[in-house]
Image (cartoon, rainbow, N blue to C red; front, side, top):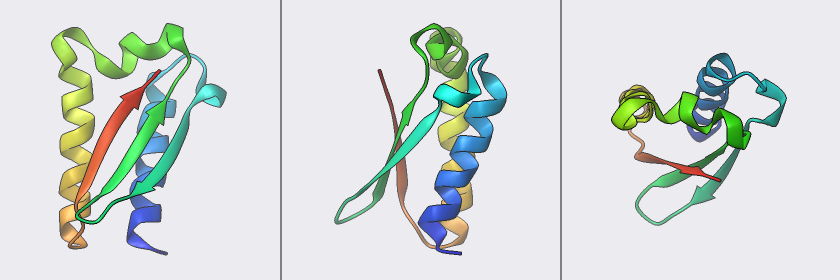
Length: 82
């Protein structure tokens, strides 16, 4: 399995377990020169669940995915888009 693909799967897994509408969760890979960007989309009513108070949950998600990516020598960033 490709490293970027596994980061996408990890992000999908985390997000789907946080929201009320897991079917609305999607992740789009946007390859860049320096790093892979993963765009996370959730239902608008679930936005607060993946961002959290003062962005705490979003920060934790980014930390988890980045640490996994570093093990494979990848650079990954996450954008939460609506």
